[in-house]
Length: 293
Ligand SMILES: CCCCCCC/C=C/C(=O)SCCNC(=O)CCNC(=O)[C@H](O)C(C)(C)COP(=O)(O)OP(=O)(O)OC[C@H]1O[C@@H](n2cnc3c(N)ncnc32)[C@H](O)[C@@H]1OP(=O)(O)O
Ligand SMILES: NC(=O)C1=CN([C@@H]2O[C@H](COP(=O)(O)OP(=O)(O)OC[C@H]3O[C@@H](n4cnc5c(N)ncnc54)[C@H](OP(=O)(O)O)[C@@H]3O)[C@@H](O)[C@H]2O)C=CC1
Image (cartoon, rainbow, N blue to C red; front, top):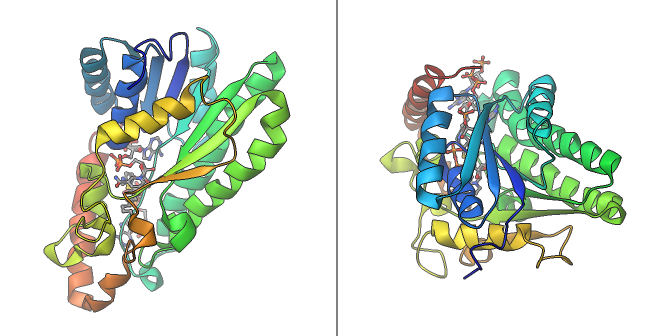
């Protein structure tokens, strides 16, 4: 769809680019000429991802360990990247989420999700923005949101809230930083099955409801990674020079044809919720064992 050199000379950081959608975006950017950087908290996962991105894209990729919940960690990562040259683009993709009845959430559970999605996107955007502004350089920021910024969703309330905050940041920064040549957009995907998301959002047979099902998507299927890449490459490219402040849905019409949320989980019993929580926490424990930060 695009010239293979459409992103030649671009240097793009994808947070959470070691797995799932972030890794797929990184492959797309690198295959179209960009030097991609990915970050996350697991060295082994990042090393494998870099090797895969280089092989699949025949392009340039590097990884840095960083925790987007920690502003000092973000600053250290940005300084390391900028030492080799400025980024031209940032994708706020790192995310955290799990299904839970809202009344069961502890402050730490809420904070884990809010700080990853909302604070992480803010810290990374400001870390790039202030460097671009100081140097008089243009830049592109794209945040990976979800259609719940328009619909909300039961049982994932901290994620819906945090993504809506980043939607507001997108519109606000587009206006504030537009005169400085910085474009700020977002995408709102519907279901694109990944191990990371499905382990936390569809851990049991009983949790398969609207948000994670394909049968009620008007286009009757999940999204494909090539479709996601096409949108990201376009938004990141110089050809997309007059779009800013927008959140573009990529969901086959899902959010326009309810239920694209977890509303259907109202049928779960307390015992089902306990099993869901145990399954989610088993997945989290497995990931934590390989965290490097
Ligand atoms: C229409 C669209 C359809 C699809 C939409 C998809 C939208 C996708 C959104 C996503 O972001 S999917 C990404 C999924 N990937 C991840 O979440 C990866 C990162 N995740 C994590 O790091 C963990 O999962 C984490 C739990 C969020 C954070 O880990 P951390 O090490 O910081 O925290 P913990 O100490 O383990 O836990 C903190 C706190 O949270 C409580 N908690 C954990 N799981 C549950 C649960 N299932 N239910 C209730 N509470 C839970 C845990 O007990 C801790 O609280 P305290 O007990 O200490 O008070
Ligand atoms: N899959 C889907 O259908 C949809 C996904 N999305 C969004 O796409 C994004 C990616 O999700 P997906 O690929 O499915 O899930 P993944 O779990 O595969 O991706 C989450 C990534 O974020 C990284 N991450 C989490 N916390 C931190 C942190 N504190 N610091 C740095 N990196 C972190 C994780 O790496 P590590 O744990 O090693 O740090 C992981 O690579 C999320 O923002 C999600 O909300 C939106 C709509 C639909």
